[in-house]
Image (cartoon, rainbow, N blue to C red; front, side):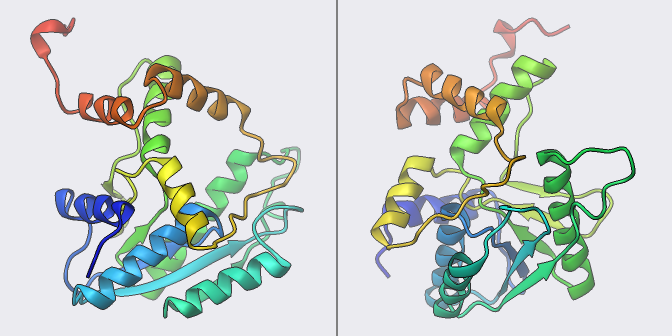
Length: 242
């Protein structure tokens, strides 16, 4: 099987971080965006051509936020994609606004936590052991920079994370793929990116930190990969450790 450049990086991440094992039951967070579309496509290919003995299912969490999630033709396109990939897809509807406590206002963080909580609940109830999310290299580096500047700590999304409270792992097979490569590949496949258009989803601060990250790396793939490698290439003798 010939691998595209994007697929090679996904395969490398799966190998380097031991993201997929035999008999895994993997739930894909199907947002309807380009990232999760490429993720689903790559995992479907791996299962088919690499004799992967693992199960895949997609779940799209739909809420009651106007403009949030995917609806109408966008939802039909998502269902069609998963049917083409031979991955079962389930649509789960939850009352995101309806769960707000009296006196609390709706915001992007609340929506995200409700969707993530529903993913975990679904994973546990159906016996899946891993959740695959579409976070890519740019997401990881942006989070790293935000934590360093705002919290004074070196921390970010990791390719593989095991919850302490639940028998579930989060895996991020796109961890080594930059966003521009994903955008280009999705475009070449004719996949339309569907993003949230609600009044609460404009995360301006995160977008500003992504812009800063691009400037810091010279907006080059090499610069991004060097920043990523810096997280594990620690020169303790040149750092002010207590």
